[in-house]
Image 1 (tube, rainbow, N blue to C red):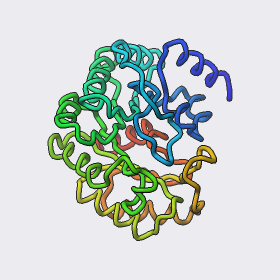
Image 2 (cartoon, rainbow, N blue to C red; image 1 turned 180 degrees about the horizontal axis):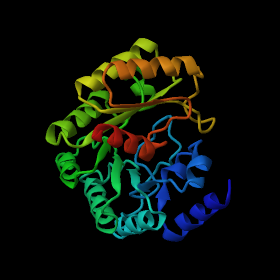
Image 3 (cartoon, rainbow, N blue to C red; image 1 turned 90 degrees about the horizontal axis):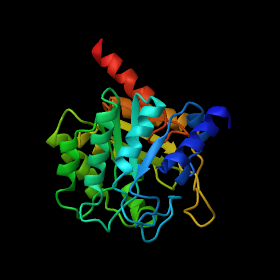
Image 4 (cartoon, helix red, strand yellow; image 1 turned 180 degrees about the vertical axis):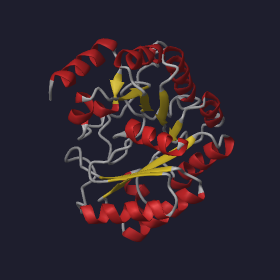
Length: 276
Protein backbone atom coordinates (compact mmCIF):
# COMPACT_ATOMS: atom_id res chain seq x y z
CA UNK A 1 0.00 0.00 0.00
CA UNK A 2 1.07 3.60 -0.40
CA UNK A 3 0.34 6.85 -2.23
CA UNK A 4 1.67 5.62 -5.59
CA UNK A 5 -0.29 2.36 -5.24
CA UNK A 6 -3.50 4.27 -4.58
CA UNK A 7 -2.85 6.66 -7.46
CA UNK A 8 -2.30 3.80 -9.92
CA UNK A 9 -5.39 1.97 -8.63
CA UNK A 10 -7.43 5.13 -9.21
CA UNK A 11 -6.00 5.73 -12.67
CA UNK A 12 -6.61 2.15 -13.82
CA UNK A 13 -10.23 2.47 -12.77
CA UNK A 14 -10.47 5.85 -14.48
CA UNK A 15 -9.00 4.57 -17.75
CA UNK A 16 -11.31 1.55 -17.75
CA UNK A 17 -8.50 -0.96 -18.34
CA UNK A 18 -7.75 -4.30 -16.67
CA UNK A 19 -4.54 -5.58 -15.13
CA UNK A 20 -3.44 -9.14 -14.54
CA UNK A 21 -2.05 -7.87 -11.24
CA UNK A 22 -5.60 -7.53 -9.92
CA UNK A 23 -7.36 -10.31 -11.78
CA UNK A 24 -4.79 -13.02 -11.03
CA UNK A 25 -4.32 -11.95 -7.37
CA UNK A 26 -0.59 -11.45 -7.85
CA UNK A 27 1.37 -11.42 -4.56
CA UNK A 28 3.70 -8.69 -5.88
CA UNK A 29 1.00 -6.09 -6.57
CA UNK A 30 2.00 -3.83 -3.66
CA UNK A 31 5.65 -3.65 -4.67
CA UNK A 32 4.98 -3.21 -8.39
CA UNK A 33 2.17 -0.67 -8.12
CA UNK A 34 4.17 1.43 -5.69
CA UNK A 35 6.74 1.64 -8.51
CA UNK A 36 3.93 2.35 -11.01
CA UNK A 37 4.65 -0.90 -12.83
CA UNK A 38 1.65 -2.81 -14.13
CA UNK A 39 0.90 -5.65 -16.55
CA UNK A 40 -2.15 -4.72 -18.60
CA UNK A 41 -4.73 -7.36 -19.49
CA UNK A 42 -6.64 -6.91 -22.75
CA UNK A 43 -9.72 -8.57 -24.29
CA UNK A 44 -11.80 -8.22 -21.14
CA UNK A 45 -11.62 -9.82 -17.72
CA UNK A 46 -13.45 -13.10 -18.41
CA UNK A 47 -11.63 -16.16 -19.73
CA UNK A 48 -13.14 -18.89 -21.90
CA UNK A 49 -11.10 -21.55 -20.07
CA UNK A 50 -11.00 -22.72 -16.48
CA UNK A 51 -7.41 -23.63 -15.61
CA UNK A 52 -7.16 -25.14 -12.14
CA UNK A 53 -4.44 -22.73 -10.99
CA UNK A 54 -5.75 -19.40 -12.27
CA UNK A 55 -7.75 -16.78 -10.38
CA UNK A 56 -9.07 -14.98 -13.49
CA UNK A 57 -12.83 -15.49 -13.73
CA UNK A 58 -14.26 -17.76 -16.40
CA UNK A 59 -17.49 -17.65 -18.35
CA UNK A 60 -18.96 -15.96 -21.39
CA UNK A 61 -16.72 -12.99 -22.20
CA UNK A 62 -17.91 -9.51 -23.11
CA UNK A 63 -17.59 -7.92 -26.52
CA UNK A 64 -14.11 -6.78 -27.49
CA UNK A 65 -13.62 -3.04 -26.87
CA UNK A 66 -12.21 -1.52 -30.10
CA UNK A 67 -10.99 1.51 -28.12
CA UNK A 68 -8.99 -0.60 -25.67
CA UNK A 69 -5.65 -0.45 -27.61
CA UNK A 70 -5.76 3.36 -27.55
CA UNK A 71 -6.65 3.37 -23.84
CA UNK A 72 -3.69 1.13 -23.06
CA UNK A 73 -1.35 3.32 -25.12
CA UNK A 74 -2.45 6.45 -23.26
CA UNK A 75 -2.01 4.68 -19.90
CA UNK A 76 1.52 3.64 -20.86
CA UNK A 77 2.32 7.22 -21.84
CA UNK A 78 0.85 8.66 -18.64
CA UNK A 79 2.92 6.27 -16.52
CA UNK A 80 6.05 6.93 -18.55
CA UNK A 81 6.77 3.22 -18.93
CA UNK A 82 10.03 2.25 -20.63
CA UNK A 83 8.87 -1.38 -20.85
CA UNK A 84 5.28 -2.59 -20.87
CA UNK A 85 3.78 -6.06 -20.48
CA UNK A 86 0.50 -6.83 -22.26
CA UNK A 87 -1.35 -10.07 -21.55
CA UNK A 88 -4.91 -11.29 -22.04
CA UNK A 89 -7.53 -13.79 -21.09
CA UNK A 90 -8.05 -16.78 -23.40
CA UNK A 91 -10.60 -15.91 -26.07
CA UNK A 92 -11.44 -19.21 -27.74
CA UNK A 93 -14.66 -17.56 -28.95
CA UNK A 94 -12.78 -15.28 -31.37
CA UNK A 95 -11.73 -16.54 -34.83
CA UNK A 96 -8.12 -15.41 -34.30
CA UNK A 97 -8.06 -15.94 -30.53
CA UNK A 98 -7.51 -12.21 -30.06
CA UNK A 99 -4.29 -11.99 -32.10
CA UNK A 100 -5.56 -9.00 -34.09
CA UNK A 101 -6.34 -7.12 -30.87
CA UNK A 102 -2.82 -7.80 -29.58
CA UNK A 103 -1.43 -6.42 -32.85
CA UNK A 104 -3.64 -3.33 -32.64
CA UNK A 105 -2.50 -2.72 -29.04
CA UNK A 106 1.16 -3.03 -30.03
CA UNK A 107 0.57 -0.56 -32.87
CA UNK A 108 -1.15 2.02 -30.66
CA UNK A 109 1.54 1.78 -27.98
CA UNK A 110 4.24 2.33 -30.62
CA UNK A 111 2.45 5.41 -31.95
CA UNK A 112 2.15 7.02 -28.52
CA UNK A 113 5.37 5.64 -27.00
CA UNK A 114 7.96 4.97 -29.73
CA UNK A 115 10.79 4.31 -27.26
CA UNK A 116 8.85 1.89 -25.05
CA UNK A 117 9.75 -1.79 -25.42
CA UNK A 118 6.77 -4.14 -25.60
CA UNK A 119 6.45 -7.58 -24.07
CA UNK A 120 3.35 -9.64 -24.73
CA UNK A 121 2.16 -12.70 -22.81
CA UNK A 122 -0.31 -14.52 -25.02
CA UNK A 123 -2.71 -17.46 -24.90
CA UNK A 124 -1.80 -20.59 -26.85
CA UNK A 125 -3.97 -19.79 -29.91
CA UNK A 126 -4.96 -23.46 -30.04
CA UNK A 127 -6.58 -24.26 -33.40
CA UNK A 128 -6.41 -20.58 -34.47
CA UNK A 129 -4.76 -20.78 -37.88
CA UNK A 130 -2.91 -17.63 -38.89
CA UNK A 131 -2.97 -16.08 -35.41
CA UNK A 132 0.76 -16.33 -34.89
CA UNK A 133 1.43 -14.66 -38.28
CA UNK A 134 -0.54 -11.64 -37.03
CA UNK A 135 1.48 -11.50 -33.80
CA UNK A 136 4.87 -11.83 -35.48
CA UNK A 137 4.00 -9.16 -38.06
CA UNK A 138 3.30 -6.72 -35.19
CA UNK A 139 6.87 -7.40 -33.98
CA UNK A 140 6.76 -7.20 -30.17
CA UNK A 141 10.17 -6.99 -28.51
CA UNK A 142 9.42 -10.02 -26.33
CA UNK A 143 6.94 -12.81 -27.04
CA UNK A 144 6.01 -14.72 -23.88
CA UNK A 145 3.84 -17.78 -23.61
CA UNK A 146 3.91 -19.77 -20.39
CA UNK A 147 4.11 -23.56 -20.40
CA UNK A 148 3.05 -23.24 -16.72
CA UNK A 149 3.83 -26.81 -15.66
CA UNK A 150 5.28 -30.16 -16.72
CA UNK A 151 3.48 -32.31 -19.35
CA UNK A 152 2.38 -34.92 -16.81
CA UNK A 153 0.28 -32.36 -14.91
CA UNK A 154 -1.46 -30.73 -17.88
CA UNK A 155 -4.67 -32.74 -17.63
CA UNK A 156 -5.12 -31.69 -14.00
CA UNK A 157 -3.70 -28.17 -14.03
CA UNK A 158 -4.17 -26.89 -17.59
CA UNK A 159 -6.79 -29.18 -19.15
CA UNK A 160 -7.77 -26.87 -22.03
CA UNK A 161 -4.19 -26.61 -23.31
CA UNK A 162 -1.71 -28.95 -25.01
CA UNK A 163 1.96 -29.00 -23.98
CA UNK A 164 3.42 -29.53 -27.44
CA UNK A 165 1.14 -26.92 -29.00
CA UNK A 166 2.48 -24.35 -26.54
CA UNK A 167 6.06 -25.45 -27.17
CA UNK A 168 5.55 -25.29 -30.93
CA UNK A 169 4.05 -21.80 -30.63
CA UNK A 170 7.25 -20.51 -29.04
CA UNK A 171 9.45 -22.26 -31.58
CA UNK A 172 7.40 -20.95 -34.50
CA UNK A 173 7.72 -17.33 -33.35
CA UNK A 174 11.50 -17.66 -33.12
CA UNK A 175 11.73 -19.30 -36.54
CA UNK A 176 9.55 -16.66 -38.17
CA UNK A 177 11.45 -13.74 -36.64
CA UNK A 178 14.74 -14.51 -34.82
CA UNK A 179 14.93 -10.87 -33.64
CA UNK A 180 11.95 -11.34 -31.30
CA UNK A 181 13.02 -12.57 -27.88
CA UNK A 182 10.96 -15.55 -26.72
CA UNK A 183 10.09 -16.28 -23.12
CA UNK A 184 8.23 -18.84 -21.05
CA UNK A 185 7.38 -19.46 -17.41
CA UNK A 186 6.84 -22.35 -15.03
CA UNK A 187 5.14 -22.74 -11.67
CA UNK A 188 6.59 -25.16 -9.13
CA UNK A 189 5.01 -26.72 -6.09
CA UNK A 190 2.25 -28.46 -8.04
CA UNK A 191 3.61 -31.96 -7.52
CA UNK A 192 6.18 -32.00 -10.30
CA UNK A 193 9.59 -33.69 -9.95
CA UNK A 194 12.98 -32.06 -10.45
CA UNK A 195 13.85 -34.13 -13.49
CA UNK A 196 10.53 -33.13 -15.10
CA UNK A 197 11.41 -29.44 -14.71
CA UNK A 198 14.85 -30.07 -16.19
CA UNK A 199 13.26 -31.87 -19.15
CA UNK A 200 10.98 -28.87 -19.78
CA UNK A 201 14.08 -26.65 -19.73
CA UNK A 202 15.65 -28.89 -22.37
CA UNK A 203 12.48 -28.76 -24.47
CA UNK A 204 12.46 -24.97 -24.28
CA UNK A 205 16.07 -24.70 -25.35
CA UNK A 206 15.44 -27.01 -28.31
CA UNK A 207 12.68 -24.54 -29.21
CA UNK A 208 15.31 -21.76 -28.92
CA UNK A 209 13.47 -19.94 -26.12
CA UNK A 210 15.55 -17.07 -24.70
CA UNK A 211 14.09 -16.24 -21.27
CA UNK A 212 12.74 -18.39 -18.45
CA UNK A 213 10.86 -17.56 -15.24
CA UNK A 214 10.18 -20.02 -12.42
CA UNK A 215 8.00 -19.19 -9.41
CA UNK A 216 6.12 -20.81 -6.56
CA UNK A 217 2.50 -21.73 -7.22
CA UNK A 218 0.13 -20.20 -4.67
CA UNK A 219 -3.45 -21.43 -4.40
CA UNK A 220 -5.77 -18.46 -5.03
CA UNK A 221 -8.84 -19.97 -3.31
CA UNK A 222 -9.94 -23.23 -1.73
CA UNK A 223 -11.55 -24.23 -5.03
CA UNK A 224 -8.28 -24.09 -6.94
CA UNK A 225 -5.60 -26.74 -7.35
CA UNK A 226 -3.88 -27.40 -4.00
CA UNK A 227 -0.24 -26.58 -3.28
CA UNK A 228 1.74 -29.82 -3.11
CA UNK A 229 5.00 -28.28 -1.92
CA UNK A 230 6.57 -24.99 -0.92
CA UNK A 231 9.86 -25.05 -2.77
CA UNK A 232 12.95 -23.95 -0.85
CA UNK A 233 15.30 -21.15 -1.84
CA UNK A 234 18.04 -23.74 -2.41
CA UNK A 235 15.94 -25.53 -5.04
CA UNK A 236 15.15 -22.26 -6.81
CA UNK A 237 18.89 -21.55 -6.92
CA UNK A 238 19.45 -25.05 -8.33
CA UNK A 239 16.87 -24.44 -11.06
CA UNK A 240 18.40 -21.06 -11.87
CA UNK A 241 21.88 -22.55 -12.21
CA UNK A 242 20.57 -25.39 -14.38
CA UNK A 243 18.72 -22.96 -16.64
CA UNK A 244 21.74 -20.71 -17.02
CA UNK A 245 23.94 -23.72 -17.83
CA UNK A 246 21.50 -24.62 -20.61
CA UNK A 247 21.99 -21.25 -22.26
CA UNK A 248 18.92 -19.17 -21.39
CA UNK A 249 19.83 -15.51 -21.84
CA UNK A 250 17.75 -14.41 -18.86
CA UNK A 251 16.58 -16.48 -15.89
CA UNK A 252 14.47 -15.46 -12.90
CA UNK A 253 13.75 -18.11 -10.27
CA UNK A 254 12.37 -17.43 -6.80
CA UNK A 255 9.23 -17.97 -4.76
CA UNK A 256 7.67 -14.66 -5.84
CA UNK A 257 8.86 -14.69 -9.45
CA UNK A 258 6.03 -14.16 -11.91
CA UNK A 259 6.06 -13.62 -15.69
CA UNK A 260 6.09 -9.83 -15.53
CA UNK A 261 7.86 -9.41 -12.16
CA UNK A 262 10.85 -7.07 -12.75
CA UNK A 263 10.41 -7.80 -16.48
CA UNK A 264 11.37 -4.28 -17.55
CA UNK A 265 14.40 -4.06 -15.26
CA UNK A 266 15.68 -7.47 -16.33
CA UNK A 267 15.17 -6.73 -20.02
CA UNK A 268 17.00 -3.41 -19.74
CA UNK A 269 19.94 -5.10 -17.99
CA UNK A 270 20.08 -7.69 -20.76
CA UNK A 271 20.15 -5.01 -23.47
CA UNK A 272 22.86 -3.05 -21.65
CA UNK A 273 24.97 -6.20 -21.29
CA UNK A 274 24.55 -7.16 -24.95
CA UNK A 275 25.59 -3.67 -26.08
CA UNK A 276 28.89 -3.75 -24.17
